[in-house]
Length: 400
Image (tube, rainbow, N blue to C red; front, side, top):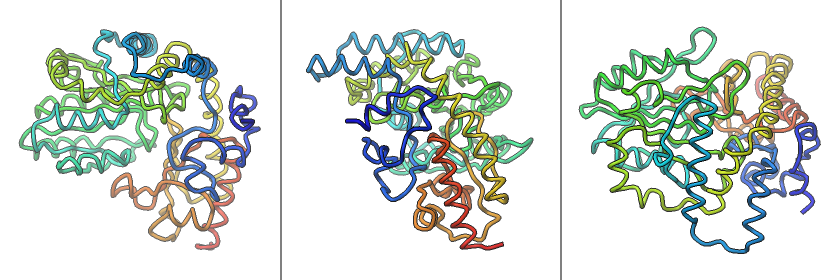
């Protein structure tokens, strides 16, 4: 139990976490590849907020783990709606915040219940990996629309998105991730308005995954896509959760925000089965996160901000040919190794040769070939160690 208690830390103590302790903590990040530094799955090494731990202790002390109570769901709905009003200026009716097990259930619902049968799923890439696998399993065709690097950042290719919708006879469903996993973009109002116009012109729909919205760096502001106008509200389903920002992914709780009357009516018919599966402790933890977790989150973001800068310094020193654009949000970095002659499977290469587990960019779309997704939510000492090990492996495989 000592390793678990060690995760109840303030920011100043994050650097005291040892890799050995982390391998004994429940989670995939360090246990899947126990001989590697975990930098692949989207978990943080920092535990969670004390307020959330206290809320969960109270549940454990009660000793009852039955189906989630209506009162707990309502508390989560209120806390989520308050968070969105306070942080982003979006006034959501409380009853339009619906409970889910996870964001992927929201994507599944958007495809099966809120888009026409056979509608293509349009995915700006690089993209969160399930955006490229879940639609296929549901019998939908995917259209990958690669983003472009312009003005020193990743941007939508609006012309190609427009063409993708034009080629979809029954409208199409755009899978939008904002802030963007894996490239870390926080899209501007101008970009989102332009995107909304394209969707509306073609009678399309949008599934907006905004799970990383609380994880923004200084100078950035999250704009919920559905909040921009009545038009975007009319064609959007928005999925959110406290799971990434407060490190709660295993507790299985997320929210789907309904932003128009038509979808709310459809939810009355189809929502019961979709909502089924959210866990009691997950709902309670999400409520505590939204209501009381901001001070802890602010500390974590300060620490992550230091890590995203440190990563740039380490790459410049040890891997100067790696392309890196600092993320504007999330704790994920998108690293370009194309200037190094390395094997095709970069995830396997770095696991085997560097003992660092990352996501191969190809899992995020064809444009991701030669890239890796790297999770910076670790101690600065571990970040140093990971980049040194990766540099040693790269230099051994592709000496200058």
